[in-house]
Image (tube, rainbow, N blue to C red):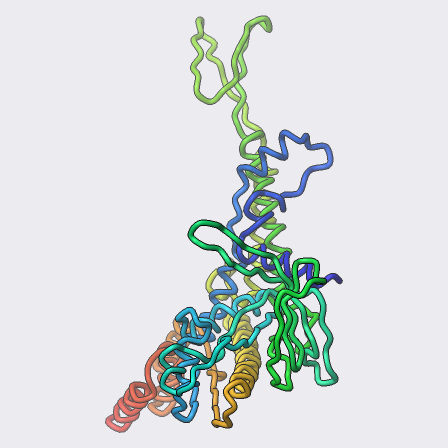
Length: 425
């Protein structure tokens, strides 16, 4: 498999760019004319279910922000509050980074440093003269080598240098190279050196996140990109059926020499007792397309752990299994992101020459449940027997799942009120 092509295709499907924007991903029928496919591509609309499923999944991950303890180090606190030198908090950056990581299964990060470090600590803080991070699309990698531990020994990737001024736009395509001690900027051909220097970190400052642990791999949501293309095409084909084959056709009991213009916006005068009539094509082709689209969307829901859009009535056991799958996937993904973020801080600390202890904790116990179903279960048990202990434990489970965004103090107060209520009973 060509992973760079796959990552590029997934990126387009997730963002709705290129062929998903201009109709280039609409497949041509075997005997379709150039004019007809061109017209079909112009009116095609990409609904992008892929993006909504990835965003919903990552929304669970950051519903409660991760906890970071940097031992009150001012530089590391500054890095968290402005991690990319563009004013973005690390939570905001990682939210966007993990969306592409979940879509592709892989995403890449460069931890770079500013060119000049001021002489005093106060100036360094004031001028934000410390490391920053930059997302790199994995499809832009041109060359790389992994060491025995699976980290980049060296890596090169496509980038652009913007040296524009008010009077002139000047953007150059370049190749950037990093290894464990040096960095180089080449021209677009990769032959002429435009700039170079040393960082002496002892590790390559370009790191990758991989859902499966391997650089060249795809994630569990990646197949949604190909299903999104099929969904895009099915809707286009259905629209073609609607436009070309579902207009009723006027029939007239009379001479075949009459000239009649078939359209949807004209009227026909007639004489005599026999009125013109219409015949309509069968609805079977449209029904077949609708059924196929529904089945495809249900498959996408299943892959994307999207419980909210289920089109079929499911048993409680079936829904429980789906929630368990979602909880397990989120827990594993959160653990991987937590480990990845520690790698970021380790390299930032190397740039700064500090040994400050850093602790990061992502929420890994999600316990997402169907709140309405759990409330129904609680009511049914209450109707059968008065069991205060069960009622209290069940309420705690439901409330913890429903109120994901409250503070620990607020949750403790709610739990205490439940327990007090049980004691009164």
